[in-house]
Image 1 (tube, rainbow, N blue to C red):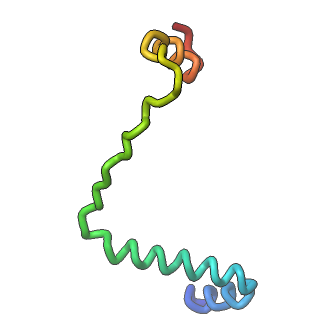
Image 2 (image 1 turned 30 degrees about the vertical axis):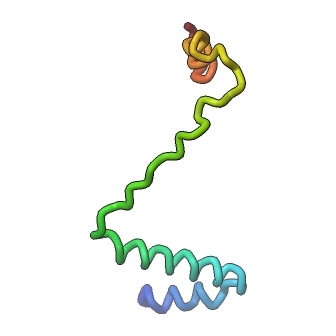
Length: 75
């Protein structure tokens, strides 16, 4: 029976250079994330500017129809 370490080495040896680069980036990302798991998450503000700028001045009158259309439900 081979160890997981040996098996991993065999798999890595079979990767193309591009696959190896992608796997390395992913592993580094995972290691960084694991190192920061105990830190509180960063809270970001949502960009709300322009959220209602659809160009249609009648959205509030049609909100029920628009929601029903979006979620495929009858009004």
